[in-house]
Amino acid sequence: MNNTWKLAIAAAATLTLSGCVIVTDPDDDWDRSSSAWEYRQKDNHAYITDLRLGAPMDQVRAELGRPDFSEGFSSNGSEVIVLRYRTQHRHSDGETTYDETTPLVFVDGALAGWGESVVRDYPVTRYSQN
Image 1: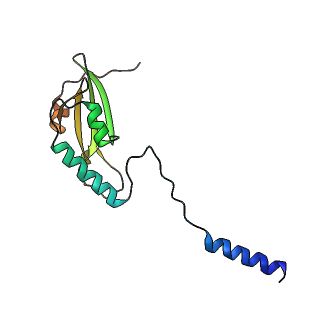
Image 2: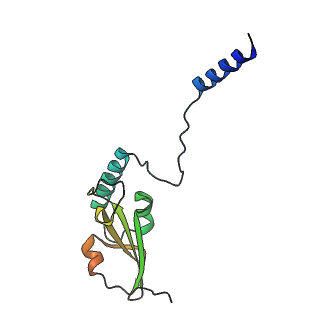
Image 3: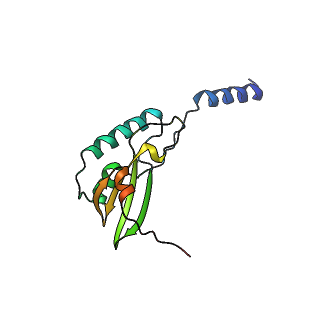
């Protein structure tokens, strides 16, 4: 058998035996396939429905993972953190938008409320950078 045939057979075997490698981000806490976001959204909604006022922010973050959006500001000398988690589907555009999330409002590390009315009605003193 000449070298050309040996090389052709080796190339064919390599292509036949090649596999697929899937790389995942260990810091990403959920899969981005369509069914995964649906499960995540459903789980987020169920967890938020059972929340109690005063729940520690660290505990909520441990359960829900990284928020889709977050904001922080000062109000009347308190630290206010707003974490937004996806809880409803509105747009089939592959992006999560504010109107698809539920805001959780933490004051000094404890859950003070959730929902758009809480965010809208909370007195805010925002820091400005000069």
